[in-house]
Length: 236
Image 1 (cartoon, one colour):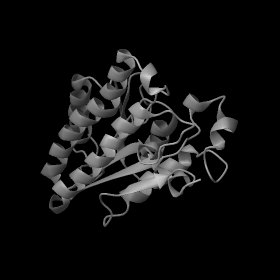
Image 2 (spheres, helix red, strand yellow):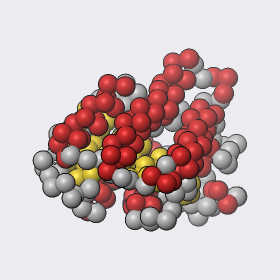
Image 3 (tube, one colour):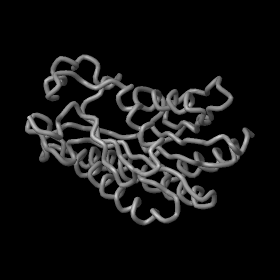
């Protein structure tokens, strides 16, 4: 087990893209990391513990927190990064698509956040961060997004509620609302997606990591929805 002084971050959806970038960012900050996704490989870094599983499954959330405590002795931060986006016209969504988006975006957040906060309370504090989307607040006629807006918008509301509920107990809660970020999921669409942002380009994984680490190092900031969206939230 690592030193009890070393802080520990749990990151969901950590096998690629933003999640993988967050693992690197927190390691550079000196944190040990518990990283989870359905396809994540074992890490060669002794301070990164990986857990394979579907975050929508309650048992996965329980394994992530249990193994994190067994390996590192504490949980200081949870980044709820795992998420699904399916772009369809509202009337074209299927029941299966609805179930899959709700399962990952909401159910996946719920249980692991409960368990992480319980651990944070035993240590007298902690930090929880949700990765959401600007589309939850600022709809775009070019991007059909009802399921993403519904579920990620729910996370933004939960972010503020958690911030207030735990404000006097040392636990902060924040969110980062994204525009479109260059990840393996957006390959082949960069030119089109760049036009959605007033700055004329897509975001980089580093932009997201920098925002999350800013919040990590900002002890007076809680209940914040930090927009990392190339100006989308300011208008077009």
